Amino acid sequence: MTRQHSTRELFWRMESLISNAQNRYLTTARIAFRAKQRHFDDFEGLLEESDVKPVQRAINELYEEQLTPELLP
Image (tube, rainbow, N blue to C red):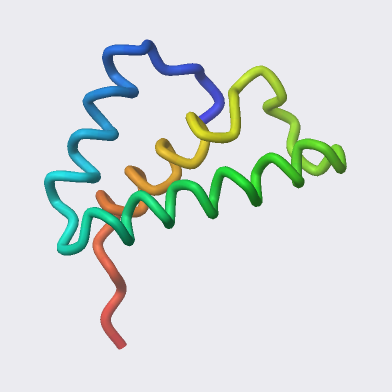
């Protein structure tokens, strides 16, 4: 996830997250919470991708998590 996505691709990822969500409000809240976490991580210098905004990073991370199948025990 080191490359920056285009605006169109980011919008498509966001739409995919919202449309596949069982609860749109909770999905939006998860994105906001993750973006807030990434903002503070970036502020503390823990992340090396400072050119990607926290909201964009949160959308990309949650989209990637949506694509990966959960591991069964």
